[in-house]
Image (cartoon, one colour):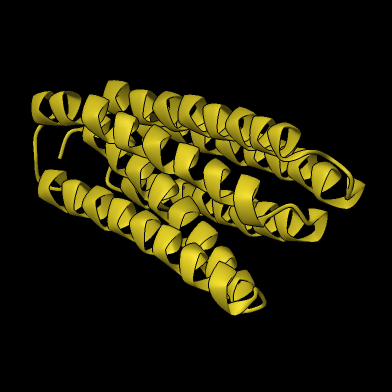
Length: 197
């Protein structure tokens, strides 16, 4: 499997983890709504789950694809991801007015992001063991940098989680910043792997 394909798989896995964390948080909070509100909330959550399932299906279809096929599918998957985020915002605008729910959802998504960072670094480290010792050093450096970046992203997300009074817009901006840093570190690590192999 090409190194760039690993980049795409890590990218998609990180988004799936965020989707799962979001759904888990929203489902838990929907139970506390009035019956009428809960019914509407559950329909919106079902729509989000369908989006997530379609995204996961796309990821599975591409799992064994080559770089060209992933590149073609990536644009649609990114659009699907953006649609999911937009629907989450709509849900929180309607039902998540309580700052506590927004903070809880943020914390679950942030935790999913941090776990995605760690898992991607572990996968990269496992893949590096397949390389010759002289080539492994470059990849090990990229993995170390990925771990440093992950720690910095985690610290930033924790700062927002502890603030407790940030708007959903500010929280999603922090998540987007962390996600972009993940994508950059993920790409740099797999590019180092590709050059080394």
